[in-house]
Length: 170
Ligand code: AR6
Image 1 (cartoon, rainbow, N blue to C red):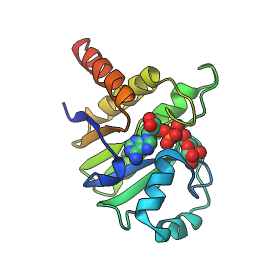
Image 2: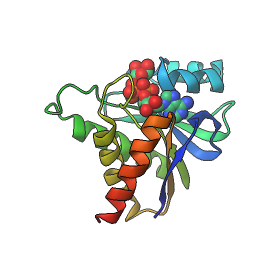
Image 3: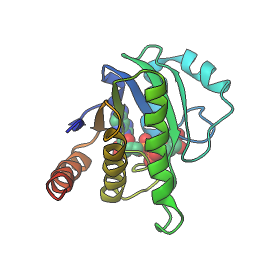
Image 4: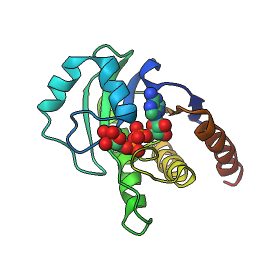
């Protein structure tokens, strides 16, 4: 299966593109967004300032600067409310738009964080299910390797277990 769940810091992953869980300004923030901007350096912010923001569910691409990846794909996940506000569709759209941009830019190894599952409050199990389903569907027609990079121990344990369940039930 060309999706792997790994534990770690996405800013350290050597790959073609990492995905950033950004906000609609694309000008940085906390969580993984803050870590990516800090590690990539100020030139990332300068490039982001020219992008004119990004809508929820969409994605934009920049260079990777000081990071060990060629590109950073910035996507804006939905804020979790109660699951009845098209959160699922918007989150699926983040993965799809990011993978499409990665493909257009010739990427064969792409690393994602668990978008929306931190500050934006999307429940981890539901967020992982959307991620895996959307990535899998994309990979049925595209040749790419995708890492889901999970930062903290507790989330990693939940994701690893759930990932095995999702894989064995299909
Ligand atoms: N590597 C991989 N995953 C990480 C890292 C890291 N270095 N750091 C945190 N995570 P979040 P969101 C995980 O809050 O929920 C920002 O302020 C984290 O444990 O980064 O989409 C933006 O500017 C969690 O599982 O993103 C937005 O305003 C996952 O990354 C807002 O937060 C996503 O958590 C976006 O919120």
